Amino acid sequence: MKTFTGFTYGMGIGGWLTNYKRFNVLPDKWRGPLSPGDYEHFDTYITQEDVLNIASFGVDHIRLGFDQVVLEETPGVYRERTFGRIDAFVEWCEAAGVNVVLNLHKAVGNYCDIQEPVALLDDATLQERFIALWLEFERRYHGKPAVAFELLNEVRNVVPDRWNDLAQRTVAAIRRENPTRKIVIGSTCWNSASTLKDLRLYDDENIVYTFHTYSPFEFTHQQGVLQSGPLYYNRKMAYPSDLEPYRDFQRFVNGSQNPYPDEAAMDKTYLRKTLQPAFDFVAAHPDKILWCGEFGTIRHCKAVYRENWMRDIISLLKEHAIPYCVWNYLSTPNDGNRFSLVDDETRAILSPRMLRVIQGREG
Image (cartoon, rainbow, N blue to C red; front, side, top):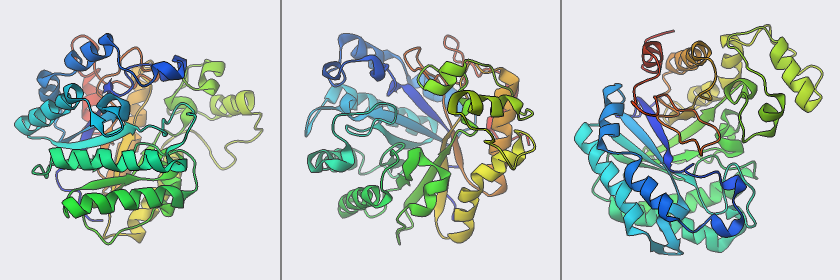
């Protein structure tokens, strides 16, 4: 597989410019405007010290998630104060010697965790705003090749070509300004590995393809407050484990009688099966770059189980030479799915073993 130079393993930042509020509990009229508390949060939550801290973990890149409404006051009118936070972040990363993936985590019309009145892929005006935002990023960071653009996080379960068409138009617009910008494109169904086969491929060595993995969901999102199944089931889960708790989750939540018919246990063998579509993509397209841009476990899961799962996922990715980025550095209490890997106050990694695991030194 073609190498993603400078992006071997990284760490994502959420909870700063995305997931700073629980949008699912806000009425529509409060989802767009920013409050004084929002600005205070953006100005203080992540600092240069945090970037230096992440760099000390040995990563070579940081994936920064941000929301369109954080940067866009009205269509085509951008908030200099919040864009300035990203400007500063890019400078901090340059000083620390780490590369950057700028990830549009939530676009207007494509929030991965709430339903919106108008969908991005149904509305031509929203699509033009989407493309214009990326052109603004290119204008601002035109001379910075160490900054990659990830067009959109976790496109919903839509007809693939509708997303492929918008992605292609966005790529074409950026390419008119910069023929070598690294552009990252994910698949539908929330960046599922199984839908990588539906992505439109490009004769462009600077296009990077990406996927996420959170399987098994009942483990990685156990007792999560944003998804109805784990919230309703409300049970701690182990990894590795025998299958009974996982089968019970499916029976209890979905009424499924035999959800894992071919599995002997919930272990690395099962994870290999779920990642096989990504491995198939690598085998079929050795001239393309595939990057696993997000994976992790909810923070209140028992530490040893988090470490075991991360160890197995990373060892499988390394087995197929797939670069990766763990999710995530720090999550606010407002983020219902807290996947953070550091302590809220000290910003120290949660355990020495977790650091070894995310560095790929176990498994």
